Amino acid sequence: MHLSSLVEMVESGFDDRVMLGAAEDAVTGAQFGALVRGGASTLGGYRALVYVGENHPLLPVALFSAAWAGIAFVPVNYRLEGHQLNSLVARQPGALVLADPGTASRIAGEAPVIVFDDWLASLPADPPAIDPPSDDDEVAVILYTSGTTSEPKSVLLRHRHLMAYLLGSVEFGGAGEDEAVLVAVPPYHVAGIANILSNTFAGRRLVYLRAFDPRVWLDTVKNEGVTNAMVVPTMLSRIVAALAGEPADVPTLRSLSYGGAKVSERVLLEALRLFPHVGFVNAYGLTETASTIAVLGPDDHRAAIESDDSAVRRRLSSAGQVLPMVEIEIRDEIDQPVPPGEPGMIFVRGEQISGEYASGSLLEPDGWFCTRDRGLIDVEGYLFIEGRADDTIIRGGENIAPAEIEEILLAHPSVAEACVVGLPDDEWGQTIAAVVVLRDGASIGADELQDAVRSALRGSKTPDTIFFRDELPHTETGKLLRRLVLRELTEFQAANDPKTTSQGEDSCR
Picture 1: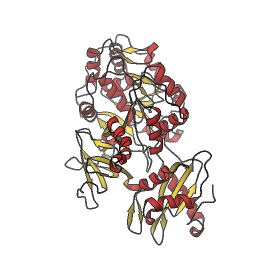
Picture 2 (picture 1 turned 45 degrees about the vertical axis):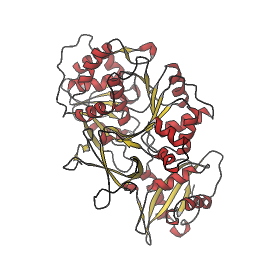
Picture 3 (picture 1 turned 90 degrees about the vertical axis):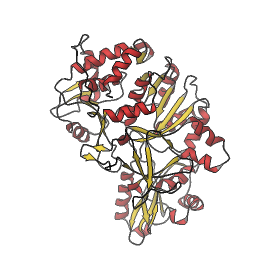
Picture 4 (picture 1 turned 90 degrees about the horizontal axis):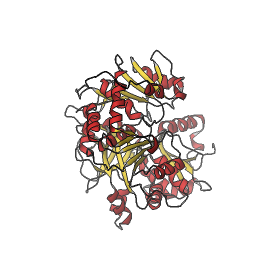
């Protein structure tokens, strides 16, 4: 199936239902279809539709207009500095660029640039009839990876990948007429695309937050009668902080999903306490997998926090169970599947898996895709993510996952954030360095944190060095920019005698 078919389904199934916008400025299914047809009529001759801007109430019109016109929709991170921004835009020759007013003037190059609101205002009320395409092997969306470990790559998501995700995980018309979803994730994130598609397919009204603020988020949930929402971990942390221990006053909210990066268990437990009547969902997926491939549902969350069984309680830190339409294997160093409980590299296969970049496909001949994430599956089928394979520290021949050390550090009441990396060492190959951000008002020494790790893990997994910082670098979607941390520490190590920084606290703060 092609994404343009969703427009026809919305027009026929939800013609009178409010599908987009705040309550006072709503767009029905019929109006949505007319806007998409009008938008598609303006895209003749273009090879792609690039969107460079913040969230917008009518953002789905741009995506579906591109689909109806048979060209790719390419959302780009508008927060990037000028050179990076224009470099990504330039990767789409022959494109029309839609931008918000603050970003339009920053776009250089030959591509025509139109402010999104001006484009919407110019759409014809009675556009010429255009037959939508039907080839589901055409590229529907191009997303740039976040570049946490390398330069951004162009991921190609074809119509068949995105439709496979929808048909396998969402019920058409499954949402009630009273349901509304608040979208706070940015449009250039795969979760932003998935929110548009899955909620449109379900018939749920989309409400957009232009820029995230925890208080605005809470007020919007209440004022708009929001029933569903999705946040990244940094957003959840800021919402919890804004509540300051008081339960959230959001009576309509039924489901709150989170994903995109690892969330602190302390923050999650506090969130569960502050939103006692809300079902929490942890969604794990990659850009290359066309969004979610594993889910930890509300029942799993409740079972974990209520259980005395440590194995069940541990599932709170898992990614949940893999969706039925996705196959998964955990493989060892010689590419052989391992039994439950054994860690290794995560491979997935299924109709929604793209694994394709502008530079070529990384799918194996039989369809398997290596996620480059390490993890394990327990005997009950719960998936645990250890982190990116590129992040693995090899100390004295032992493979060490930074995530398990970070989990211990984050469990300490004085620690707000933590990042663990491997630094070059002549004797061990790599030594373990941790960078820690303390909670406001907290004071603790490196030796105490080292003891905490040593008591929970083996001595070989205890950080050799702990650095203290005021903050850690993240992407706008909450992913830790580990490469920037590693670069800073490597440069610091090169500029100083390693012997002076091999134990205890770093004096350079």
